[in-house]
Length: 352
Image 1 (tube, rainbow, N blue to C red):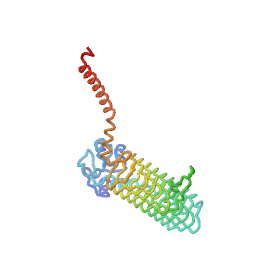
Image 2: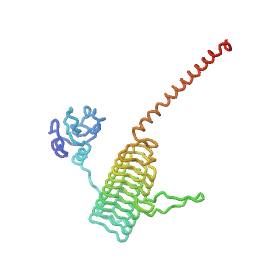
Image 3: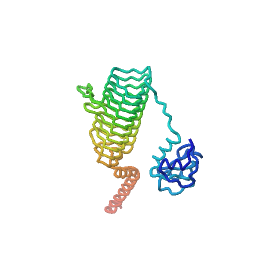
Image 4: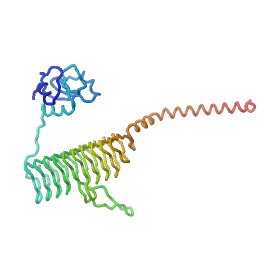
């Protein structure tokens, strides 16, 4: 598809600076772009590439006033570029259509209009699937589970029994929703499983990456709030409650009965202990270990996690330890020399 820069600017409500008749035929990253492509820059660390990119045009923030080539100035370059990608290179939709003859449906299954179920998927008894939802090949949906409208579950995901999934949810391949929580009682050296009889509730507009595990609650429910996005390889334990519009990044782990507020970010490999609260709009930076509750609006880092400014100062001190060690060793040696000289001066006859 070909569009002029002016047409693209109208789509994203941007302001063209330069030739608005430049024809755009593709989209690409600022480093990889070639002539005919449009690219974007949002992070200031990439601003130097404005001078170097081979793209024919660039979507920029409002603070960029001029450039060596035409630009479109916008309030949010990242969001604008999402719209451009959809326009110039729309994603082909090749979802399954209809009910494949090898799919297995239990008794009293309720299917809304336009539901698609792929080959060898298993749908248990009393399952309800809403309009235009898609269950890909090899999926397992356990009995008494309810799935909303326009939800997509990709191949080989497992949705266990008595789970509730909302509208417009996306669950990627290999994820397991509703596995048993990790609960055991040890008696005389033997571990006895504690029954996990609760459920999981996935609210509307949630996206769950590949190979994510979300455990069912022990008694009540594990909850993933509306609009939350979960990256690949994340572990969410029993009775966890995650608020709305959170980001949980790859390899993060949340222990049981912990509550996250709204708009919380857990960065990659963050670990959170159980039975604590993380307040609204908090950020847990990568590889942090959270052992205590975090107030709203706090950014923490490190192990154990501390407020970011405090953690940076501690880290700076740790990096200085080799230098401080050498300094102390030198001072110790000088003190020993001075003490020896004092002894000599105090006992002139003995040393004479």
